[in-house]
Length: 225
Image (tube, rainbow, N blue to C red; front, side, top):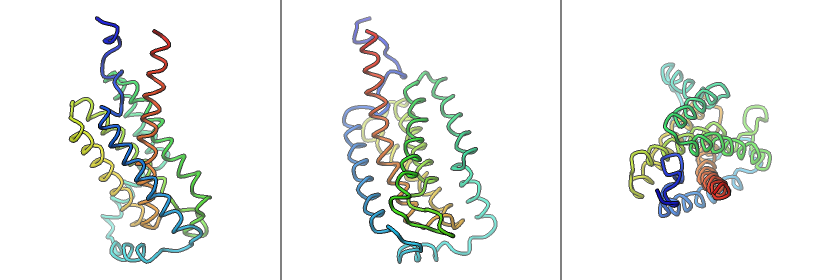
């Protein structure tokens, strides 16, 4: 085994995949950050829905009991207990697959996404229901970040190329963000633009966190050598 081959294996590979894929995810992160900031500026200080929020909210009004149950189940995934169960299951799966970097990213990526929403909320100052800060949605950011990390792992394990891998990651983020965003609006917990802001926050923060995890792991490996 050559020195370049030492430590090879799924757990040693960059969680962000090949360089072209990292570039694409970087572009997505920048775009997500720009949209999140723009929506935050437009929503700053508001205490009610905007015109777009009102239209979307009207379209989703009248969800029956069965759909509200689905929304509640989805919402639970973003609650502390539900989120902890998801993260613990994902970390266990990553360790069983010998992908410690991804295990770290599951915790760091979701934590960074949710933490960012908590920092941004008082800066934007948008409120809903008796003054509760609402922008951006932490629930939407969490599930989007979680889906991104799991999709990154799947893309790497399946050996997908940069186009297919990036498509899988973005599709997973879109499905997760849409599902949680829909649930938050149906339950009246957030305005629609809050959920878009949470989705964009995860798109901005998670690739950056993955890059930092890779750089830190590579630096520690070089030090050990």
